[in-house]
Image (tube, rainbow, N blue to C red; front, side, top):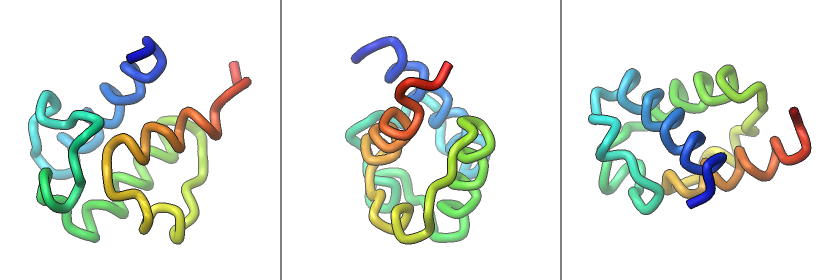
Length: 85
């Protein structure tokens, strides 16, 4: 995993832990938010809002509904932040 990706996973894990109480080390790219991490829809909205704030991005509602795994969110963040510094 590239350093930038590792940093994104770590940042997202911190958000998930803060919102849901799931330990950071349990939040890995292959985890499904609902099936593996027991994230409900309200918590997912809060995760999305905090992720948008942390990374200065916008995640459209319809896009967020399609993001089932941590990897989906990480890939989206990488895609929309490429070239920004």
